[in-house]
Image 1 (cartoon, one colour):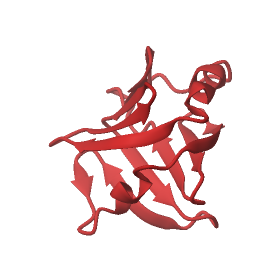
Image 2: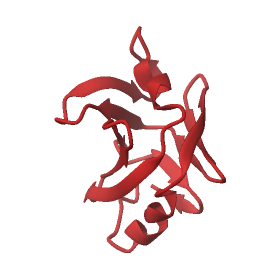
Image 3: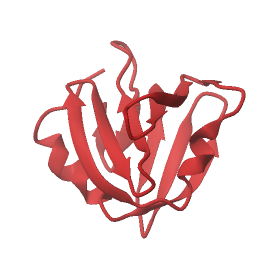
Image 4: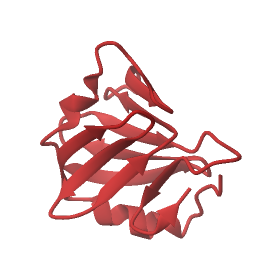
Length: 118
C-alpha cells in the first residue's frame, strides 16, 4: 500500500541475529515471531526461496500451498535483510533459505513490523 523506502532498511535490519520462534497461521494472515522480540505480520504475500532464489513455498492473502513449507523456517536466525524493491524485502536465514515479504496491494496493508506498515 505505501511501499518501502530506503530509510526503512534500518528498522528491518533490527531483525538480523533474531531467531524465528513461532509461525502462526490465521485465516487471512501469517505471523513470524522472533526471539528475543519482534513480529512480522503478513496480510499480503510472502515466499520462501532456496539459496538459488527458486520458489519453495508461498503464502498469498490466506492462500497457501498444500505442503506449507514455511514451518521449515522455525528455529532459524536471520543473518541479513535487504530491500529488493519499493514493494519487497528479503530476509536471509542461516539455513540458506530466504523469506521474501511482498507488498502486493495498492489498497490494503500487506505487512507490518514494529510500527512499519506497508
